[in-house]
Image 1 (cartoon, rainbow, N blue to C red):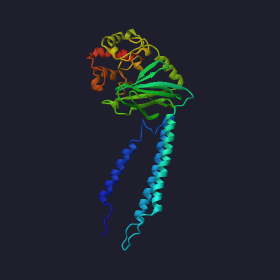
Image 2: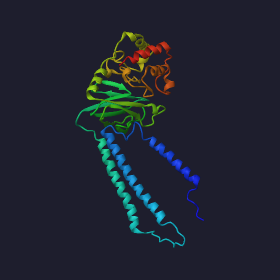
Image 3: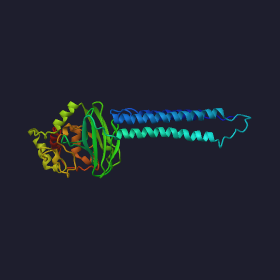
Image 4: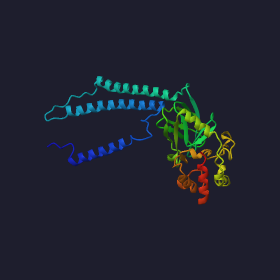
Length: 345
């Protein structure tokens, strides 16, 4: 009596499991950020390599599985069949199944090395922008040495420009990654790393630290905001200005000075003469134009008055382990500080 390969319940169970796993797989393919949704030449080269390797792997899988299934059906045991002929030691077959995979692997190697050189070589022509990305625990600082501007959490760049990013860390190893624009590069203390990317179209692209760096590694995000060149020039001009001194927010400014905020943060026009004079002892972000940024504390919160108030009430409850202490502010003090900081556009 022949025993069925799959019993009824087992067959339906396997089918449901396959559908469930497939849904999880395809659910992960949508939305941003994604290396399969490139918005610049570096990401496009990396996506092309991915699709090429996937195509080669799919071809090999289909061929091998096809031969396997054909062999199972063609040479399955039947009643009265003689013992099959043994092919052990067939030199021709052994050469074929050794050389064929080697050829496929060599082709993949060639395309991989070619792509590595393409994405590693920084173009020398066209418009250029130099930025130093500093990995802190746990937020990103961006220094524009030519423009003499320092920001945090938001890396603003012009479209169609080669952005040359120098990577620096003074604490632990981080990793700079913007999936839609460029691959991962480690940020290693005491070792100079660099990378480049260019953005094809305006938009906001999510970046993330991709190297485990401590308790709040997952909350060490940033945005790359790509603007048309004329809008970028306007942004730079605004960022180069000192913070506005509006008497309406004088109480918030007084609290910023009296509560010890200047020990960790700098504001041009308050405790800094310009961006170049920021002391190295400042451990927190430069807040000169804080109100124009999208994120608070490395992306753990969106920059809204409500979220900023939550942060000022108890930073450790929002992001445990960060460097900002609980200042014990009253509700009225929080309100004054929020109003002042959000006015710094």
